Amino acid sequence: MARLLVTGGAGFIGCHFVRRWRARHPDDPIIVLDALTYAGRAANLDGVDDVRFVHGDIRDAALVAALLAADALDTLVHFAAESHVDRSIAGPDAFVDTNVVGTHQLLKAARQVWLDTGTGRPHRFHHVSTDEVYGSLAPDDPPFTETTPSRPNSPYAASKAASDHLVRAYAQTYGLQTTISHGSNSFGPRQFPEKLIPLVMRHALLGRPLPIYGDGAQVRDWLHVDDHCHGIELILARGAAGESYNLGGDLELPNLAVVDAICVAVDRAFAANPALRSRFPHAPAAAGRPTACLKRHVADRPGHDRRYATDSAKARRELGYEVAAAFEANLAATLAWYLAEAG
Image (tube, rainbow, N blue to C red; front, side, top):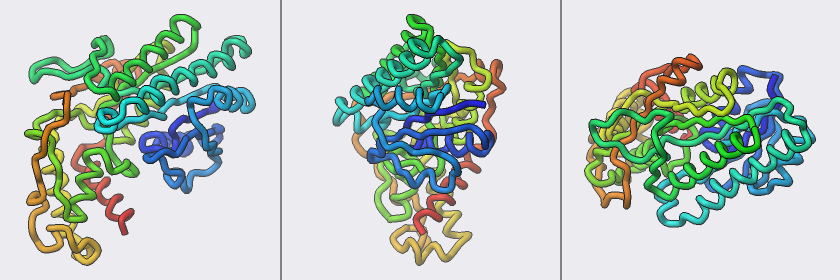
């Protein structure tokens, strides 16, 4: 049995992890700590039984230490982060404050409770990071591995790389039992519509332009949120303390191809369900026109990484990690969720 504190558990990936863990470990105590900033929604945890929600900030080390100590928690899963690259370019301070300072406050609290006063009792601090810390790959470069040096190119990626280094330092210096996961681009239900897939789906239904940065040839490795959470669960169960693990979707796609796939999925959904025409009258598909007519190329993002590719061989070999479903099926299921949510 584990006793969990999940930071950012009302956010996109965090809420899916809480749902998954509760379904598979019904007796494990879970506390969710979330500040409910713009991308966190308490409603993301609706219907999940026996989860205690605490509205609070990860930068409050005293609060975190009190939660860990009072409830004898032994596992901290750290999702809470500012995560949108565009926002980090416009306002990097919040990313340093939350992702770097916030992670450090969590580490301090964990060290105090588990090591200084807890005499080193068994514990695990898992830090959820991103493949963006590795920087950008050329077209023929091999995928990122766990030994790829950090070369972040955006303030967001730099803040996550910094937090990675802090987690490693607390393991090496103080003996804190840590693990780190570097996930690739995740998608699925409940994602805040600033990220590519939910934004394009929402705009397609509202008849708004579908913005594509530059030529749209930026390549990403796409990972469904359920597979991402499965990988984190495996790390907690089987991962070795002090190790990091890449969690990829083993599917490299240019952004333009993802937008095209969404357009096709929307067109198919409207063809299969004529009732959608009255619910979303501004969608081109409601008038029998292809959703792709909304595509618009816009100025590229400053410092835009050209390609990510994530090698998950270590997680497959050591943890039994694997991706469960194909991209197309997951994309259609994600669209179905957003159609139901919009209704």
